[in-house]
Amino acid sequence: GTAGYTIVPVVGFWVTGFSRWVWPILETFHFIGLILIVAAVGVLNLRLLGILKQLPVAPLHRLVPWGIVGFGINVITGALFFVSMPYFYVFNLNVHLKMLAVTLAGANLLVFYCTSAFRAWADLGSGEDAPPFAKVIAASSMFLWLAVIVLGRYLPFTEEYLR
Image: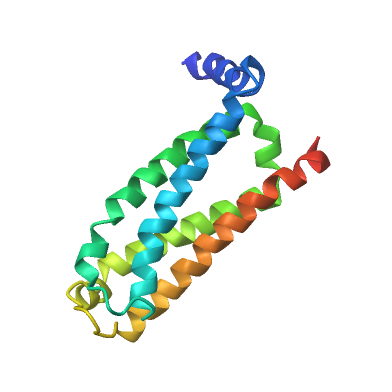
């Protein structure tokens, strides 16, 4: 029905016009969500790349649910940002590139968990080297999440060109 057409402007006003504190609070939660993602996925990727080779993989894998929580936080806060300034986000190339990087990072994670790469590294003990395919997936994950961070950080600089 029409309920969606009336709620979006209300939420958009709540985010941008209700209080000057709403946007910074949402930004803070968005940043916390990203920290959870990068911490969980990043430590695991560093281990697979051989940087934290003294750590066994299994305990690091237990951090992944925290990354999922962070992703959920970012989906919610990102949706609130979008409905508050839809034209800024729809017509912004940086947003499209950031969403592409997020999508590719998600696909990368699915490839990792749905192939033999996951089984090959899941039982790596302290000092053991990850298989080459796992290293490729880990390196691409690190690159994609860095791209998400950089592109997200550049969004405020493009705001004045889209008004």
